[in-house]
Length: 210
Image (cartoon, rainbow, N blue to C red; front, side, top):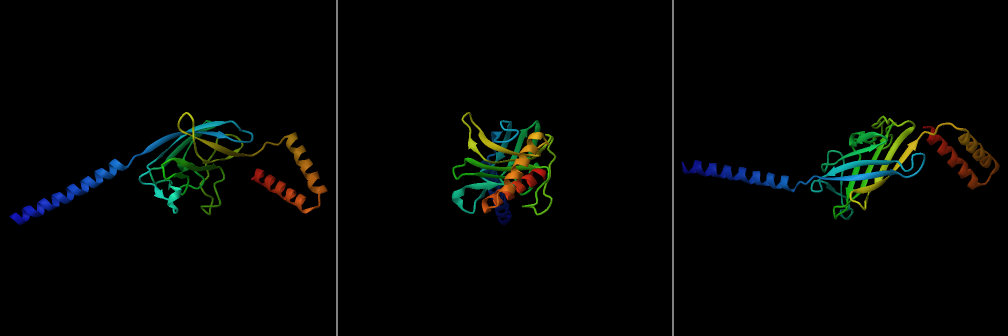
């Protein structure tokens, strides 16, 4: 009889300990949500502003290979989630061109967010995933890619980031004229430097047409 009581008491003790551990872990897990503002840095849409939020749990994030670099999170890790609205359209982590291995979020050892590597592309990506990637339809006409990376604390609270937009230029007289002038420069120069200029123009033109 005493033996049965001891077994029951031991089992109750074990259950209590596990419950305490679970409670402590839940209490330690703190989901933090921050706001951020993204401003298009250059090009046709320079000055366009978007707004978003990102959430993360610093307790469950993964420590970087070099601990001094802080910790990071990706979709499904560290409670990470992101939402960003620009051009009247909202994008989430599931829209990243390399989802589910991106977007990538990083904080310093002091817990300050420094990186939000988030890219949305209509063409997907041939790089990290080694396939068509994760293409997302962008409603804004001519916009093919939206990308951001670095975070910096904003004066009024939250964070700021620069947004880079790749767009497909619309044909125009000015564009044709500029292309013609560059062609003349490339044709008239025979030296190694001008050959590099010519190649660079070709690459830019190919990228714009992609």
